[in-house]
Length: 338
Image (tube, rainbow, N blue to C red):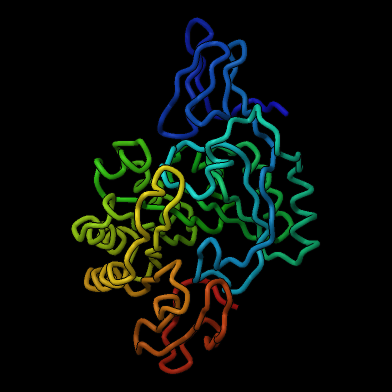
């Protein structure tokens, strides 16, 4: 199903410029953008993936991962095809590197998403698996409907979105779970094929400060790519200074995949060092991901350091908060809790 894009400029000679992500692809007649999902047809830009769902499931919010927004809640999670990145170790490359001409998608209307979310007792809808920014026309309509029906909304995103696109969907998004993959042009170039990563940082700040979204950050630590102390401390310092000390940061273990299958998994000792560096940079809530059974999965009070939530992978084993506060020292815990 074709859908005319919301954000684009018409240029001379039937060319167009897409304004959804910072690549700002300029396309001649019949050409597709870097993401493969937007095409110039006779001087108009169209989305090729409106309503085309490649993956759908009901997941706990911990799988995003998001730890401070109604822990244990269920979310209708769906994704389409394509991405505005080409990460060499992508875990979802079958859909994110795919072109929409292929098979394997099912049309699901925004209205049907609402019905499914309610049928399966979901607290909200999460657009994930591939990059939701390039699904803007569809996710915007779905987010508007979700708000009308009392559902929460979540982008699991690489953050590579223009201010114009973010401002369109900003009033209807509750959670912005963003990847900050590195903290240097060289690392971002090798991981995501973008040298200028400042639009990601600016979008993340805008999501939190302009639109009041709950923000959690993820960094997948890849050996030899973004695993040096300077880079990881840089991310931690930026989060502290720009988003606040209580912003959760998930430092996750890389596992070999796709073009990075020759690498070893991230050493757990390095992840634990990175967590300590983050604490030294002033962060309060730093989590380790993809390391089941590690205490880095758990939530501890930033004031008294007592255990508040104990986890194992995506399951909550203990939940000790009382009305969003630590039961031991009564400190309000940042986030949303039932």
